[in-house]
Length: 120
Image 1 (spheres, rainbow, N blue to C red):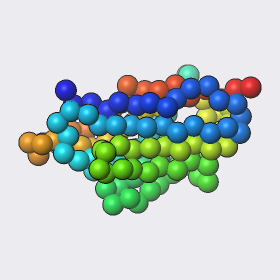
Image 2 (tube, rainbow, N blue to C red):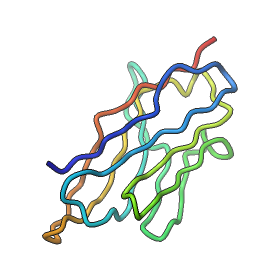
Image 3 (spheres, rainbow, N blue to C red):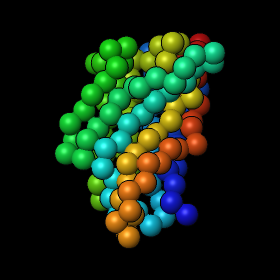
Image 4 (tube, helix red, strand yellow):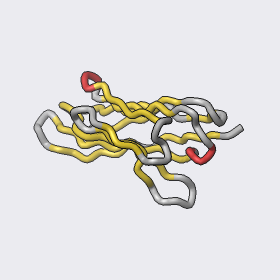
């Protein structure tokens, strides 16, 4: 079964850090573009950060300078390092990736979501 598996969420105090991971599993040859999104209660899902296959990155203004998206192509894994966390960063974080299967079919995949709560 082809899927994205997220990990690393949790409860952290304001100013703290968390690192989210998103690993592709199953018959995946590689990941092309990928991104992290988040959805807070009562709000629409919003883009947090994206990374291309070549490593170019883009960030929402609200997280620039605090979050860093990266990837490990050998592991088909994408990361989101979150520093200086604020209560307004509280949300369910989702990973999205455009993946290439071993049969060369393209798949647009979403992770199951991981809860990040920033609170004292």
